[in-house]
Image (tube, rainbow, N blue to C red):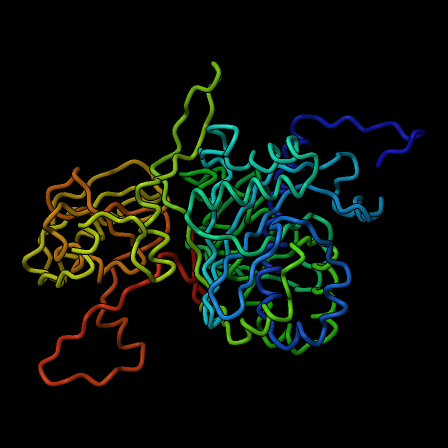
Length: 488
């Protein structure tokens, strides 16, 4: 807060933009640490009192939910709010003492945890998603919290409206709520130490002040901020930045789950102290129960996914041009079903036909690949790869930019689509009247053609009866970044 005798510093537009970029980046990094900290099993139990001592509660889910013995969904939200106990020195550390923060929820991730805690899927919801907000009509998703606060008079009302909006959009039930502020970010980065990332190509973006070579780089705190906030020079802007951030979340989780952090009491204690001072949760979230449930989780079992979208058009709202993210609501049930490992709710009859169909032989299938990603030449490369496995292929072409890869098939081509899906693990599958055979639209999620036989060889083989042909194993939508993985 600015004292009565201290003049308020006036920021230039460029200074405000730089500050905003720093704030967006720090939210992502704090969320990465929150996600990993809850997976540290017995170490969180050991440090339970020191960790939860600084956590504030918000009545985001009136009445609470009972998640004992079942899957659960945790909504992680990042915004610019300032904890009530933040000191001027702490705000100065973040470079935010001159502004009052805000409650626009620019980072929203639903973490889906199965009952056995063996894996986790981070489902990103773009902040500019154009959605129905109950009582307010169509608006960007990141405005739901603000609408709730203005109508209900407190942050709990904002959280409740945001949760309702996301539940209506995805069909998921949100069981718990975690809100993170900027406070403690620099302490977290300092406690973790350098973070290693890998780039396929060198980058030099003066807007985000990032200058890294191709290959592996060890990032300090400043470089980490630049890495996750870069959008200039990336073909899809904020959508590509979202891929960067998902990758960075996975890298951070791997580092926190490493022995170097978990077996170092001083380092782990510093991380826990920094996070606990920056977190709000619903009162029903029990950190011990959650950590115990996830004690067997490894970084390789954390996947990242983004809700299906159809593009980023500019629309007119009240006479003004507004850039939005158009959500593919038709593909949403199948996308969520893939994550949950269940049949899509309210799916058409043809969906059950796909489920029961027998995969066709590749030689009997014709598939056309379209490029809706941010990379050049991937449609041609995927077509060549599929042809190498015996598929007939059409002429590769371009498509509107999209975040997620989808396999579209015409009615009656369920078996053909299932054959293609075996070679594109993680892609969603949907019936479409716009195609005559099978069409693959590659998104910016990095999904590529993979030999299912090679993938199966990495897992323990199950005994098969003589003459049996192994069926492709269903895959979960999303990307799991292996140790040492490189991105664009």
